Every structure is written in C-alpha cells, then in structure tokens.
Length: 432
Ligand code: LLP
Image 1 (tube, protein in one colour):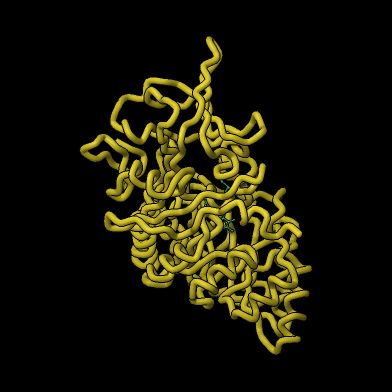
Image 2 (cartoon, rainbow, N blue to C red):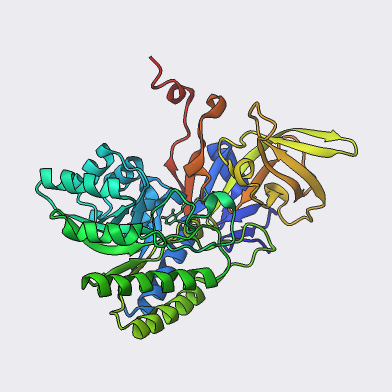
C-alpha cells in the first residue's frame, strides 16, 4: 500500500513506521522530525552484503555511502552489518571515527580534499584514499613520506558513461569535476606516475556514474570500461590492479510510478558481465566494491511536519504550509524531486486533494512538492513525507536560522533519539 516496506497503518488509522505510531512520535519529539526504521536499514545492508558475497564468492565489499545520511548511529549500524564506509570530508570521517568505525574499511573520496583532511586520513589509517587528480597524488605522496607511511590509493576514473539521471547528479561523463578521464590519456598518466611514487601504493580503481539510476545497463557498461582499463594498464605497465570500486547510484522508489531494480538482480547481472569480461581480457577478477547510499537510507526514512495555514487560491492552487521545508529537505528546490505525502492520522483515507506543500523560509522556491496528492488537510494535522531517509538530513541547512530537526530511529517497535534537535542556542553557538 505504501512505497516503503517499513510503513503501515495501525487500528487508529495512523501511519506507522517500523510498527511505531507516527502521531505518537510527533507528540513525543515534536516536529519537524526525521524518523528512520533501523530494521529497514539493516535489511538493505544485509541484502546487499549477501548478494555481493554470493555473486563474487566472498571477494567483494559493500560500503555505505555516508553522504546519504551520516551520524554516529548509522555508522555503528553499518559497521555491525559488516559494511565498509564511503566518506567525503573530514566531517564524515570524524563522525565514523568517533562512532568506532573500523578505519581500514573506510574509503575516502572527494575531488578536492584539503591538506588537513588528507593528514587526518593518514593519521586515522583509513583503508583507501580515492585520489581524484594529479595534484592530489603528488601532494599525498609528499605527505605520506613526511609521516613515514604508505598511502593505499584508488584512482577515481571517469568511464565516459552518460547515465540517464538529473544533470546535477551525473558524474561518469567526461565533462565532470570528478576524476580522471580515460579518453585524454590523463588516467593512464596518473597510473604511471603513481607506480613511480615511493609512498603510494595503487590498490584499485573507482568509478561512480551517477545517482538515482533505474537501468542496469550503464552499470554493466561502466564495469566493462573499467576492466578494459585494468587490462590496458597490465599491458602497458605489467601491473595488475587488484580492486575495483563500481560506485553506488541505485535508484529508489520515491513515488508509486518508480520501479527500481532489485539489488540482487543488479548484482547478478553486473557480476556476470564482470566475470565474462575478465575472462575475455585475460585478467584476474578484481576484488569488487560497491557503495550504495540512497538505497540503504532513503526508503527507511520519513519526515513528519505539522501543518500551519492552508491557503486556497481559487482556480490556482492550494498551499499547505509546514513547519519545515527546504532547510530540512532541499531536494525539490534543487532537483524538482518528487515525493509522496499523507496525513499521518488518516493514512488509509484516499488522497483526493492536490496541493503544494510549502516550507517556512522566506523564499518562493521553498517547496517540498507541487501537485501532491493528499487527504483533506487542516491546520494542526501531522503530515508525513515519505522516503526522505537519504539526502535530507545530510543536506539540511540553517537558512533563515532555522534549527535542524531531531532524528529518531525505530527498531523492534521501540523509538530512540539518535540526533538531538538543534536549539536556538545552537544557532548562535559560533557567533562572537
Ligand atoms: N559513491 C560516490 C563516489 C558518490 O559520489 C555517491 C553519491 C555515492 C557513492 C552514493 O550514491 P547513491 O547510492 O546514494 O545514489 N544530493 C543528491 C545525490 C548526490 C549523490 C552524490 N554522490 C540527491 O539528493 O539526489
């Protein structure tokens, strides 16, 4: 009945998440409120893990892309499910470290890591640093030498794949700020340079073609291109790359019409291509890494809001104002992303109204969605926006000095606070 498996309706007609009444949660913790079902997160982690183990004979690792949703608690969940972690900043790295995440299973990404970030990564002993460009490579070698260490690196490669997704979340094509291009010879140059550096050990290659992708074909194509490059490196240098990170990007269901690929069938099809391509190219099958973010955190989350004014503009539209908006979910403002929403206390009733959900910022573009179907909605109602577990909390801001909402995890029918709601004191904490 709902787009995410973790949602349901109880006898009172209220929306539940992980079996917990959302109206009770709104009363207990206030709104806006992010609620995530830990069991759902764990189910996704474990599906990915089982699948990669099965199709790559235990020679693979699922890393959770923490940019989708990052706090100490989810790092602990990912660690306990046996996953690795993708981090892209000192902030994400520090969070993982403070959560006790095993540093050897951390991949540190980013197209412009700072000196402080690379120093921290070496100090913590992160498993792999995914080097984006030649400037970073030379710099990292010097830094590692000064610390008497060897940096285990991957190269971020642009495989030249044009995945069909929103322009802002496409990354695999040549015109991208991320990584090294194959076509221009820049990637091969980087490999040769890395092989000559004393304090660098080139472990693998990485690509990520984009996000919210529904087709399997671009992933298969990317795998072929990357393996082709591994074979070319072997021919030109004699060095055989042992690890390949194929990135994340698997689409999820935000609205009923979305039809995402099952994790298992993605893994099965891509592994078949990996196996046959390695055979054809006469190379050893590398250890395979994938890094899903959205598909682990997204479906597990919802956001609860309290409705304020409902403004009906005759023959034009109805604005339903909520106590949050682009500060806790900027995705409609940024990408016109679609969401489903409902009145949490009447979750089972038909959604016959068509409304625009508007946030509280001084900005006309502060909308959660337009043309959204919802039940008859009144001031004081709690509404739930669905599938907000990824890229909502992690992309939230304090625009208009609005404090960030709390995050609640539910598990086995129980709820617990995992990130406190920001207070007004938090808002001026750094003001002098
Ligand atoms: N690996 C790398 C190197 C990435 O850049 C990303 C996402 C992922 C993995 C995880 O991709 P996922 O499985 O979550 O699709 N803010 C945008 C999404 C940006 C994605 C950035 N990179 C949004 O809200 O849709």
